Image 1: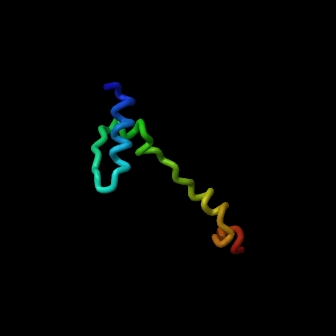
Image 2: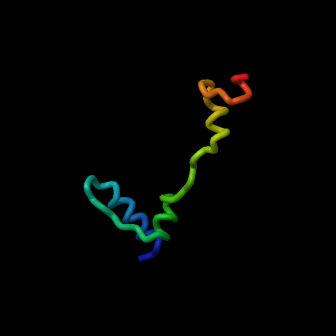
Image 3: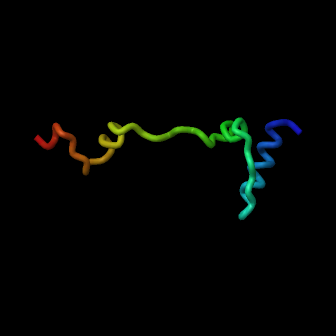
Length: 58
């Protein structure tokens, strides 16, 4: 079975309630399990009008 076919089958199995599927580190990375999508502190501050920076306080 081809690697992509194995991953596709594992993802289908993972959608079953209560079924636990094991992925190798390479498989997990291939399906985006370790994708970092956090924002930076300055992006968070810029997106919230409730956060006052030191410059705005003065």
